[in-house]
Amino acid sequence: METESHSTFLMEFHTQQEKFSSPDELISPIKELLEKYIGEVKEVYRRCSDQSVSLVLDCAQKSIATVQLKSSGLVLMNIDIGGEDSSAFNQEASKKFETDVKEKLAVVASKTICPIKRGGPLDRFRYLTSSDERLLEYDVDRVVADVHSPFQHIQIFHTINFGNLLVLDDLQNLAESDLVYTETLIQRGKIDYTGKDVLILGAGDGALLWELLKENPNMVTMVEIDETVMKLCSQHLRSACGSALDSTTGPHHRIIVGDCLAELDKLKSENVQFDFVFSDLTDIPLSIKPQNKEWQFLLDVMEKSLSVLKPNGQFLTHGSGVSSVQSLADFELHLKNLKPQVEFKRCQAFVPSFMEDWVFYQVWKLANE
Image (cartoon, rainbow, N blue to C red; front, side, top):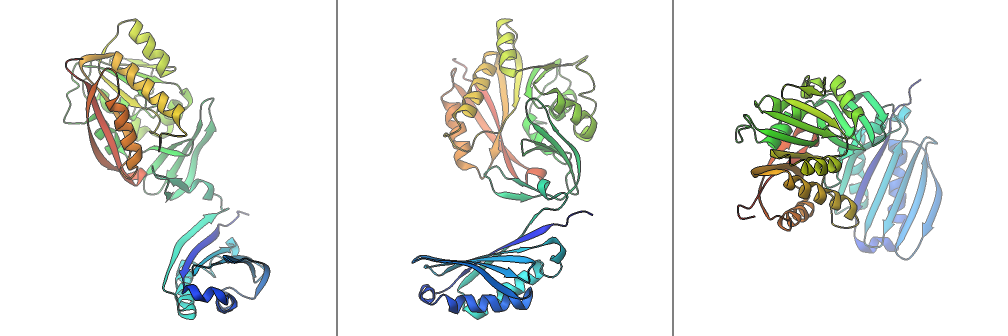
């Protein structure tokens, strides 16, 4: 028998500060309302201090509610509902409960967050985060793949709205709905790739390679460290990658399985140069510290990429979500400090499965460098 989802309702209420002096005048109405909506309430724990009162309440011996009263007048309440009781206290009921609490406690302001679901067969795949670490909920109805390669945790989920979604180390990378990501990265219609030599770093989902091959390039060289990602995407993300990953070589492409930094060093030593270099690797970190290792990797990638770029070539990469303001500012500061010196511009597009606008960069060396 499958375990049903457990739901956690997160609520906050703001009352007058002076009410904290008589906490039971707040606690008693809350208990009464919990009994009305859920069942018999028994207080199993209470801790008091000058700044707060914390309680744990057993509701009908099947659900748990925790209540925190703050001296500022803030009341925090979490209600955990077991899967078998989810129909008795759902989101609609939580809104009515919130209204009743507001009336009973003469609340100034309140907020109920939609329930967090846990414990069901797909709940552990349901939640990912935005670029600035806000919670996102996905309509996952099937796990297509869930494996660990020597390099990372690879998952592909089927979602109702976005199709198959590739997730690497708990970060959404690309879904079947996300053609706009690739088209914005390559600046389709704005850059002519006809007869050009192109280098791709990363992009193991194959979508970037597939779309570039439609642009009549001379040769696209792709360097991807994780062969498992490519194999899984060639099976389960074909609407995005087409047949691009079916063979490591073709008339206009070759795929190298290896470390991009080592391959960049090799290409430089062989005096190989490209018209365009794409970096579709890790997301840029949220801050300078404590992620210096990640920043150093990105800096190494950029500097080595510039070394194999033709004088009039371009380095193209993604940044982060537009709401990650500090992260983008840090990235642009790094761009301004690159050697050789570069100029850059940025654009953005809404990526469906990311549920936010994403920023993309086009970078080129200064003419006098």
